Image (cartoon, rainbow, N blue to C red; front, side, top):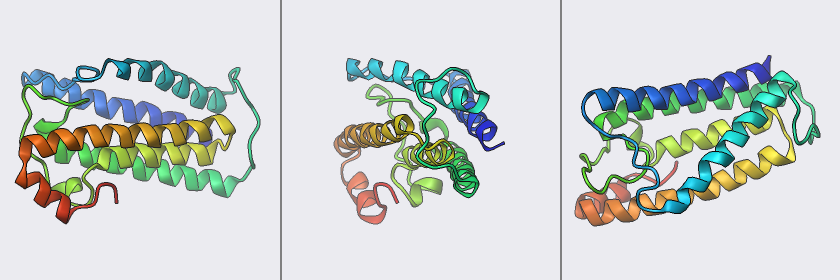
Length: 188
């Protein structure tokens, strides 16, 4: 059961992000700016797709690179489901809080207003926190070395992107962003 929920979380997570992109597109806003600043970002999607396959392979017993698990614990798996659901909740709250300012990547051409309310009042990067919590939850459900490596690599990639975004926000919003940074932590 926990494995199926892990797979469902990926579907819901992708669905939430795509729904936001489509809603913004209907309002004439191009939300996907991924890879516009750094072309090396295009190495990320194949790794993400492989990650999705690994979770689905574990959940539905498809062929996988590894079947080895660090430990088998039903309680740990349910703790993972709890993390996944908390991550989805935070992701949804973040998307609602972001409103029309949501972008995938940095929009240097048409940046919206600086969002500091809702989920952004407790974290400057709640979407990345949500993704990290989901990844941690999926690792707890399927505790194997590949998902552990993915979780650690994702944390590094998220931090790398956060630093890029914060450099842009500092340059674009100046004192307003500096004040926001004094009030709200980068992650939690």
